[in-house]
Image (cartoon, rainbow, N blue to C red; front, side):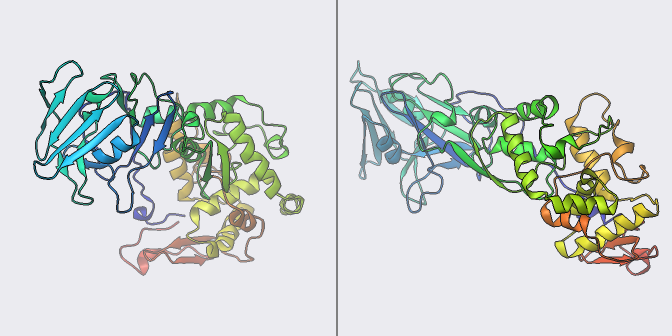
Length: 436
């Protein structure tokens, strides 16, 4: 059924193509972004720190064109061998590396600092991307993230990593937009895997929302560090044989079905190992789904004249069309009633699924599934589920309300209206869209 277009329009924001690079200057990033901090010890073992939300303490800050500024005294405290001193009279902050004799002296509100190498007592004047300042939040001395490299054993002892590299390493990119990596003892040559870094759990909890499509589930898993890429998940989806799961084995062959396991990645809260194999992750979803779909539910589907796959397809339509669980049984009745009368379902959610979740995620002729999922075109159910429905939607698909409804629409207040006969919403509200 058509709803108001404004209710369903969604803008997908995708953080795109970033490269692994140490930059003394970080190009424009939103000031609200959070950054992780990783520091190596003498043995080369890295530890993760979150200095973004340190209650009452100095944390990372972004200024200007997204330059990441670090609290000097906290940073030196985290790096063995560095000492920090601040002179309130001269407004100068000094950092010294006791192991190599290097020293840097920063002055408040200056973009320049004095650098003392281990071989000379005379300072060299160096310029930073952004001035040293005192934080308004904590009064801590703040300097650009790259400044500390001058006291390290290697000038390449710090790097900044962006999202694409973080994903490969199993880091949580749903929270952090970048990683600052420091090694006071040697050059940073690559980003350590999250599983090898102290203070990062080797497992991660992920909640899959009801109604997520396969592509959304895969993107969420990668952003949380469960898998290194969506490619590994799609490879498993297309190439691994999951037919030893009864529900999967029962899925009928259909060349016009896009994602075989759409509808079978049961929405729930899971705990995964970071950087898991795609087939292991999908297998966990399927095992959970098998435990939730009971024998009674299978028998009920059969009594209604549907396969469990068709029930999951109906449930997915209900999940995406229903504004809340209270409307699910009535929406289910509309779907069942129209199917029994061989009427087209004409559900907008099926169109949105094609446009938002099929076309952007397939190669070749991206329109090849249109007429098989678009319920304004196909005379029956779509070729498969259009999302992964939750248990309420599944139960609604199995237990439709006993009505004669054939039509429904939602108004601008989110209220649902059901009827046996077609109703034109424009008859009651001039700004409503026509519902068929």
